Length: 238
Image 1 (tube, rainbow, N blue to C red):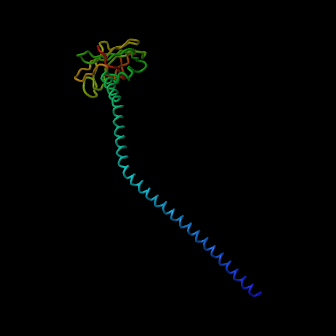
Image 2: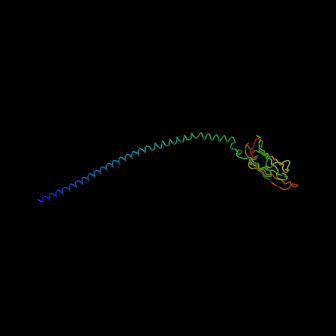
Image 3: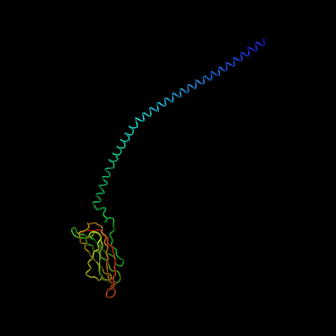
């Protein structure tokens, strides 16, 4: 009797073990099913994403020429607006510059300072460069003898550019009727620049003057000395 009971107990234990094994296998099968379903869902998502990507690439390929064409039109329109907006301003600026140029606003006489300079002991008190409407340019200036002794003028020369003759030239001046200039007296030379190259009124000219003289402190006058000066002045109407 005891032997039968032990046999039955062994059979029951074996069946329980088999049942547990079956439940474990079922759980494994269920887990594998779940994993398979997940994989199928993931695959479906990836397929959907691939389809969406292909659609987006197709849409981008269609839109790219349209966007480029639209951008080109906008740039062209912007360039036209720029030209229209600033074109009138540039024309107005050119008109103002042309008016100033023709009116003589850019003439050198408007930016240069007239001057007449010799050495301190022979100051230049007055000077003028003038030209009649149908005449030739003439220079007149006046210097004072403050050397402390009388002098006798022996020669006067003028050097100028495009004044009377074309290019740079040296002209011999006319000596004053009274060559002796005592202390405190004034010398007033004048020179007419004759020739075809005549300046226009308001032209600014620079003339270099060289005056040769002798010392008349003692009689007779002796020695040869030279003083140089620079006269810069606009051409004025007579």
